[in-house]
Length: 115
Image 1 (cartoon, helix red, strand yellow):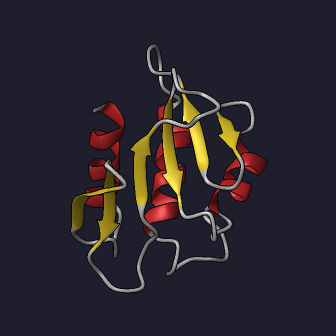
Image 2 (tube, rainbow, N blue to C red):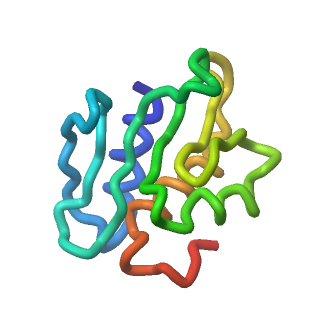
């Protein structure tokens, strides 16, 4: 629920993201920008390699996770090119997560980078 709250907070605070649609994709909560060609879908769930942790999942055809790994290897674990792994309990690396979520929600508008 905390990550969900951050997704909506980042969307509200970031120009050009606009409204989000919250839906289910593969039985997991998913967040899509309503503005066409704006952002990439974000899903929340778990992964097979870390079932006891939370996963923020991104489209595996993007460069998002590769970029996050390069910048935030000390803050998060990653799975392949699709998931950022965070602890299910305890403190969240809030600022780095906000940057990652903003990058996903503006992906198609700013593929050149987010930092």
